[in-house]
Amino acid sequence: MLADYAVRVEQSRGRRYSEPKHPYRNNFERDRDRIIHARAFRRLQSKTQVFTRRYSDHFRSRLTHTIEVAQIARTIAAQLGLNVDLVEALALVHDIGHPPFGHSGEKVLDAAMRKHGLFFDHNLHALRIVEDFELRYAAFRGLNLTFEVREGIIKHSRDYGAAQYPQLEEYLLGQKPPLEAQLIDLADEIAYNTADLDDGYEAHLLALDKIRRGVPVFDKFYREAERAYPDALEKLKFNEAVKGMLNRFADDLIRHTRESIASAGVRSLEDVRCGAHRLVRFSPQVEQERLGAKQFLHENLYFSPALAPEKEDAEKVIGELFDFWMKRPQDLPGAYQEKAEQEPLARVVCDYIAGMTDTYIYEQYEKYVRL
Ligand code: MG
Image (cartoon, rainbow, N blue to C red; front, side):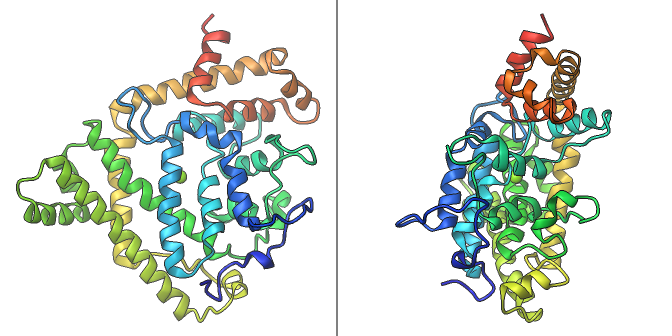
């Protein structure tokens, strides 16, 4: 049952190119399926989330992270009466614009672009992927996704000002995104703030004691697990604690979002869009816990010396390949050389690199730079 403030597929603003209706899948289901069948989606399997395969091959990749976000977001959306098909499509597409080498890749690519007076932004890149780069249909370029999915790609995690981004005007930049899109950002936070503790512990980069001292909410659930299962293996108590934390965050998000919808007097999608603030949010207490966990991961994991080789690789490989193709555009694939006739070369090189998996970009580096 959809709540009054949910997005209704029959009221969608539709696709850029009109298409015949599908006999038994609605437009948001079809968008979800188009995303799953996209090339850029498959490439997420070989893109780093936090850890490369250097440590182990059961760490999360961008693909498995994406699936975890979809799972969490679907569960919360159903409780709030939101449109689960739209939520699932948005969760599956939310990281599709990420370059190789995780967040350091994004930073390096942005720095390379800034030298040419441009910049790299993964949400804008994701929009270009689904609008232009995916070639699957004879009738049009891109995936021809509905307005609501494209809008969510742009607006789920931040606000873009109309003055700075005139090309995004159609996405109602002055309005808040629907709750389905607002939810994605926080489901993403829940997913990685718990999963990265898990992967960091498994990688032996985060010791149990350190996590217990640095993340009180984790420690609370770990103590509960110790009381309930005194003889269990440490890793199983660890899992119980991570699970407790994840459930607490998800429960709180459901409860507090319900409250914020009620206290804002929101009754329709229009009310959501015209509201002064985003309504999907944690309680102040859990928001503090989330920020605490995030800060702990920043201080102890993302910038730890153990992960420095990944960062150095990102700088070296992306930076040097970027410069190489700027100097030798004739070594780009034909389709990209053609694009460079219409767009700045730096943009074209950036698009090419951003689409690569970690594996593929290393191959390119071997081929062109480390001759
Ligand atoms: Mg994500």
